[in-house]
Structures are given as structure tokens and as C-alpha cells.
Length: 386
Image 1 (cartoon, rainbow, N blue to C red):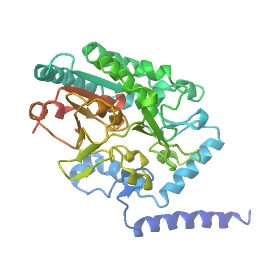
Image 2: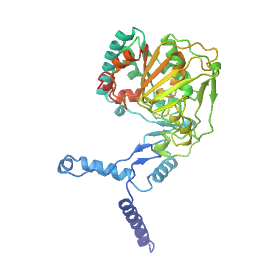
Image 3: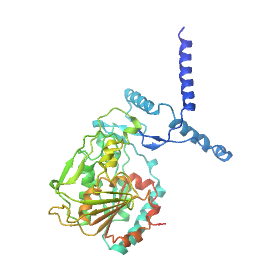
Image 4: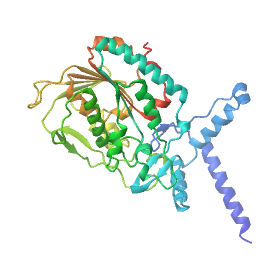
């Protein structure tokens, strides 16, 4: 009982110290571990005080700017694992070292999803009037919790995205590429990263096979590729949410077995490269950016004929890919079937797409998104150019 006052003093000292530190330390703008921008101190005014927005924003600000935030996340996750919990901060602590992002119905915006299907349908009709029937394809990639269900903890339920995919298939039956079936078929293989929300290059390889079959393209066989695995320990975006100790992922890079030559033009000449891969990103925290130098507004890849392309015949036509980051590791498989491959990320670009199709003599289009991204982020820019 004599030690009780000292315990109170110790707890009070810790709380006081953390509070003072939070007041003294300058606010951080970006978390390298979580790979996101952190909330900043909200501005006070009578309107947001009445609405309650100020209190909510300030609570988020305090949480994001909490001293030693990364260490506390690790401590919390470790404690939850000791207590037998199999889910922490929206992440399933799954079998075989998988950290699988948990999705629920709340992650889907039904209104945005329906609008995106309608927008895509109108865009496809408009695009096919320019380049012809059968030349537009759409691929939606299910997230790991919908495919790797056998890895999830007991009684955990991943969001079954089959219903969402079915609605897109019904709206666009002639354009739809079924990736769900081929990913389920190969779910025992390393088709998703253990620590990141993306599919792996192997997963993208199977997606490429599905696209080629629907597009009437002869996909290159496995022996046509050299698989490189750089000496790089990859800890992805899902790991950043929990900081639990698991083995790192390995990133695989596929290059043609025969020497090929390309010109990669980022953002109208901002950067020119002769490689499909940004190897310098393997010295940074986010190794996934090795694929096409991360998310870029606009990339144009030209397959250079007569420059060390071996016996491979030249590509035909020009491909336009409208995408999110899931497409980045699949692009290297696609580029060899076309003279030019144009890549748009509408999160960072507001183009007049029909005009772009005409000006660049686009002959084929692929729309590729992760299912959750497609279901929750508006594709308003798909049909409304500036």
C-alpha cells in the first residue's frame, strides 16, 4: 500500500510528459511507416464548433500526432496478439504470415459504385464508337480477403466481392474480364503480398493471362520471361498499420528472356527512361514503386523496333490503360503486344479521354482497378474532361 502514491505519481508523470511533448514537438506532416499524410491541427470557427466537426477533427489530429505513434502501434498489436486477438487496426493476423486488410460493407459506397458502373457503361459505348466493338476491356481485381479466405483466422469473414463483380459483369458482359476465377484457382500460390494490399507480379501474370484470352491476344509463355528477385526486404502498406513482426515480402520483376527495348515517357517528358522498372525505388521504403516509378498521372511506353528486340515480332496498335496502382505490375506484360502503351491514373489527371483516343490513335483500351477502389472512389473524370 505504501507504493500506491508512487504509482499514481508515476502514471501522472507519464501522462504529463506525453502531453507536454505533444505540445512542444512540431507536427509531422507525413508518416513514412503508414505512408500517408497525417491530420493537422484544425482551424476553429463557430460553424465547425456547432456542427461538432471541430471536436472530431481535433481528436483525429491528436491521434495522428501522438508522440512515438509508431512504437505505440507496435505495442498495441503485440498486446492484442498475446491476448489471442486475430485482428488489429483493420488487419487480419492471418495464417502463413499473411497480414490481410479487412474490408466490410462500410468500405463500399453503394451510390458511387452504381454511378461508376453507369459512367463506365457510357464511356465504353463512346469509346467503342471511336475504336470499334470488342476493343475495350474492364478488369476488377478482388482484394486478398475475398480470395485467400482459407488463410483468414477462424470465424473471420472477408468481404465477398463476387456480388460486386457480378454487377459489373451484367452491365458490361462483352467487356468484362474475369480475374476472380483465375485468382481463386491459384490461391495456394503467392498471388498477394503478405504485408501489402497489392497482388504480386505472379498474381498480375495470371491477370495478364485472363486479359489475353478475352482480348484475343497470344500471351507470352512462362519460358519467355526471366524472373528477377532483387535483394530487398519489402514491408508494405498493410504492415504499416500494425507493425507486427513477420517475414518480409520479396518483389519479383519479370523481364523478357529476349532483349527488348523501350522508351518510357513520364508526364510529357518530365522523365525519360529506357526501363519499365524504377530500380532506385528499391532503396526506399515503398519498393512497390519499382513498378513504373509508382503512381504517375500519365505514362507513355513505346516499344522500340529494331533496337535489340531479338526475333520478337512488333506490336500492333496502341493501348490505353485507365487504372489504379494494381495495374502497375501488370503493365510490363501488356506493353509487348502494342507499339505504344498509354497509362492514365485519373486520381492525378483530368483528361479529355475521347480527344486523347483520337489524337494518339488508340486501338485498344483496358480499365483496371482493384474492386474496393472502383467501388468507393468516383470515376467522374472518366467521362468529364476539363
